[in-house]
Image: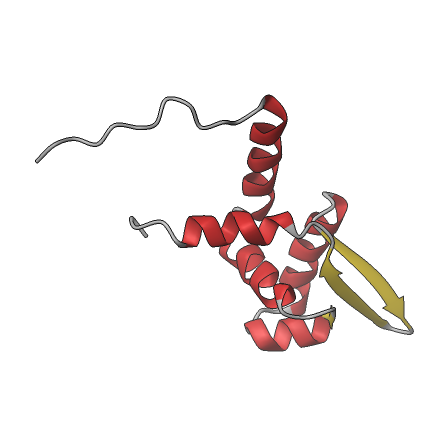
Length: 105
């Protein structure tokens, strides 16, 4: 068996590395990844809808949603008592899809 060698030039600028690291740190939790996956196929969803679809308590979900919004991954709008979330940083979907396609998973 021949060991594989890693490419020496990944073509990553400092800016690109920082953005990827930011996305990975911000989404590094199964619930957050599930939120991104769910919202990637929707224009927006209410906290209640997300909670029901992911079977996650609203209080825990709100913690994740607020953190992701503060970091610019999500955006939100209020309609009466309901808050609707949507993906603001669409690149996060590409990073997660890329990782999901890795053969070691």
